[in-house]
Image 1 (cartoon, rainbow, N blue to C red):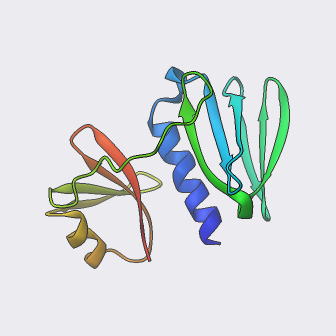
Image 2 (image 1 turned 135 degrees about the horizontal axis):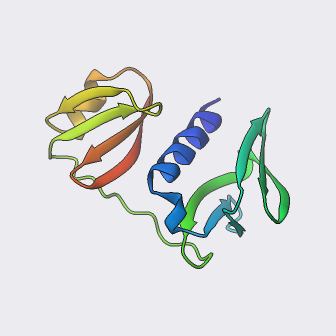
Image 3 (image 1 turned 180 degrees about the vertical axis):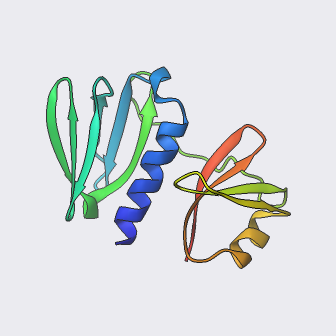
Amino acid sequence: MKKIGLLVVMAVCALMAQAADYPYLVFSNTAGTATALSVTNMTLTVSGNTLTVTNADGTQTFALTELAAMQFSQDGSVTDLVNVIDADRQVEVYTVSGVSMGAFGSLTQAANLLHAGAYVIKQGSNTQTFVVK
């Protein structure tokens, strides 16, 4: 269940990153293999333990238990994901559906006050997903 929640968060954040600027969505599995798919007419569907990706080129499936990351790319390559949020500065917190949870003095403060779940953290022009366990 946590994998599905993480997948939903990643998809929402990816969409928030203005997918129209990126022609590929790259799926990386736990073995280190990356698969780049065109975002043209792309839909993502989760059913049970499987992610089904359909685009203009066809359909591809991924086991959620083997999916390590997905990220948009200009050229289909994978880049290292970095933390873009300074944990000691003020953050704005939103649910994955876009409901504001408010502003917090730091990421630590937000983590201590929020219920378990997945959130989108905004700090200046940077956004990042955040999971409270």
